[in-house]
Each structure stands twice: as structure tokens, then as C-alpha cells.
Length: 84
Image (tube, rainbow, N blue to C red; front, top):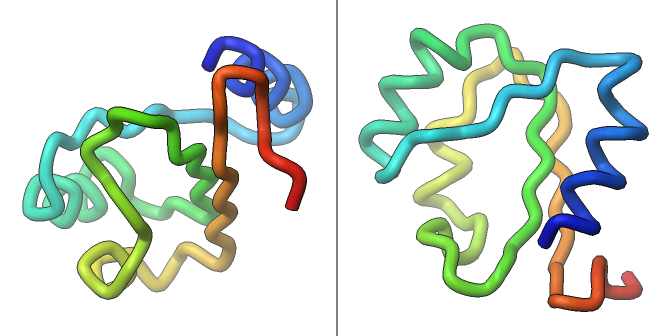
């Protein structure tokens, strides 16, 4: 999904540090929120085919730190973001 990533980065980078999640499981993500993602204020996610995260449900949200105030989700396809 280079289109989505490139567009997102171009719009957001002037205002925020962008850190890509490298966690490979919910358990690892929970630990990473305490260390390398400590203090995260917003999460943007593009659900691209083939990703390990699936839907953002209870398993995800119970791990999000209290510092995070915004979670944005975009369904992506090969053509770019879906109309929402």
C-alpha cells in the first residue's frame, strides 16, 4: 500500500513523530507500549490484506495506554483508502 503510506506520511510528518509498530503479537505490543511506544498520543492504522492484527477489538484496546487519545482506522485496498 505505498500510496496510502506515502500520502499519510506527507500529511502528518510536519506535525508529529511517526513510529511504525514492529510488535508481532498482542503480548509484545503490550510490553512495547510500556517502553518504545511509551507516551503515544495517537494511533493510525490501515488494515491492509495479510496483516497480523485483524480487527481492532477488545484484545487491542485493552492494551492501548491512557496517553493515547485517538485511534484512527482506514480500510485499504490496492487502489488506496476506501471511501468511508
